[in-house]
Length: 373
Ligand code: CA
Image 1 (cartoon, rainbow, N blue to C red):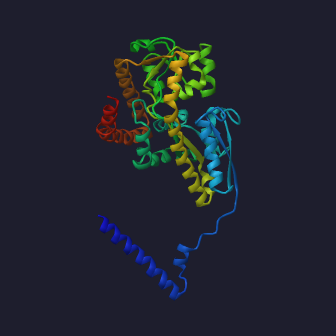
Image 2 (image 1 turned 60 degrees about the vertical axis):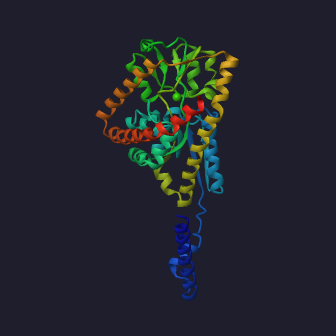
Image 3 (image 1 turned 30 degrees about the vertical axis):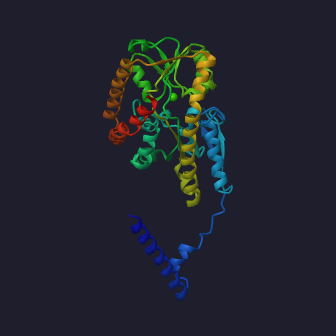
């Protein structure tokens, strides 16, 4: 193998050397010039606006959006400057999709399930109840055809989507009563987005979608009875432990929420190729950075919630999870039977999940079982 690689390398190197000396003898051929002369860099500058669905500069999510813009400015040597706005600073937090689609602003950082009212299938690119985790979602998006489907879905809206963050597995949420059976969800008003909300509706609860900034007040005032948000780090910052007693796991509804960067496609197409590559590179960096931050901070803050704030940690009972799983399958079946794009995307998603889980069962799962025993 090593010999083969070495031979291959030597062969390639000699082809380059031969081409180089031939062109020296013959003068510089135009094709050789294309390869060796740097293309003149466009010095045109762009000033863009990015809105987000997060409170301004909100830890990890808003910070990540701020950094994404900063990285783009640094990498482009100031040729693409992006001003970042928190939710509500320029437009209401959940109007990003429409504003970028119309070209009012050029970018939005958020989560795709916020846009289910525009296209139901957007929800498969945010979080799917009992779906794939962050690592598996990235594998599907980057290496399993998921990103191409996402681009196809957003094309009619003049939008270009990119993964730009992931929360990892979330927590199940904050409740003021214990969940001992599925009947405990009846009549409960819960802040929960996406397909998870439809699952809660099947269990007899009401799902309420609201942006991050409004959740605490709604919970404190009893507008909602319970809420999910993200995980221990953010939930601690939001102070939910002051308004609810029980903290449930696991986050069956968001086993890995992909955060998205959407860009107005016409604006993106006006960028020279190097700036387009820079935007893609910065989104990938944000994708890695955010997941790493969540992973690094959640355990520390979970301990803090339990030790310093006496939060009562609870696991959803197995039969509750099994019923929620059954409801989730029904919700998805209903969605794919009435929406062609959802059907197409979920066929790819579910096939990938089935295969990747077979591998996970003997790699990740066995490893975790082994180290935790
Ligand atoms: Ca959440």
